[in-house]
Length: 322
Image (cartoon, rainbow, N blue to C red; front, top):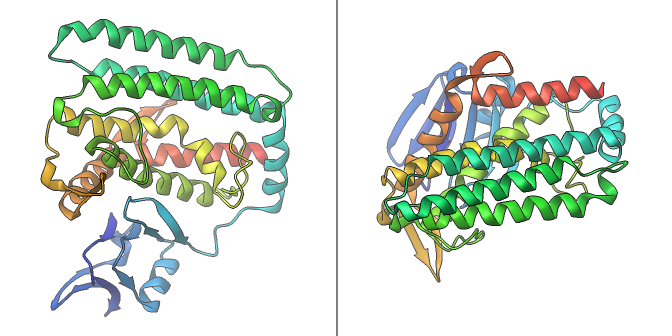
């Protein structure tokens, strides 16, 4: 399970070998063996003893901001990239193998975008041709990405980003017009979100970033050595690469919540035109995301939870770089 500390003033400590979560005078206890990860939101705290227990149990600790984006992480000293892998990561990121790898990830991402569009069943049937046209455009961009050639990403990174960005604009513009009226939006917006949909998606992406980064670290990869995004200083750029084909999982959860119309206006706080999820909204989204990531599915001939598939792909990359 993921232990989520989200109420202001909440403090996680240890009592008689168990985690003790205190909020005011109330306390609840959890066996450490049941906890996969600990997530702390703003206004919460954790004791030295709880950190030590988590490290001993190889339980990751994530600190997230108001949008759900992880800005810090604590993990066991047993994890860490091997020098050989780090050296090979650099060469991989600069060579043709890295280019083929990132093209494959982006192609999967765009294919998944067409799957999400296929979920849309607008009340206005005249929108169906728009959805079909958008899917065809995305497939066109996907083909162009696969057709990019070069000795590495260095000379073609701009081309790849341009094609991926063009596809993204078509995708989100179509999504924004075809959702139920309460959730419709005009393009992507971040920090702050300008509507309910983007507030949900930003938070879901933040949760997914944490999952992907944890998988890379556990596999022995250096999250700060990327392929397509390697020019961003002091950022976990490999996470930005690796997350691309998995963004669809966050998008699916958010689109499904919107289509089911279970996210209400009172789940959001609006300040100066910016939208943020409040505590109630976060609980609904976090529960939906964790349920989805914990669901067992078959990929590459293996049946396991979605979050485990991310780890397996990270491990496969690490094995390739040894």
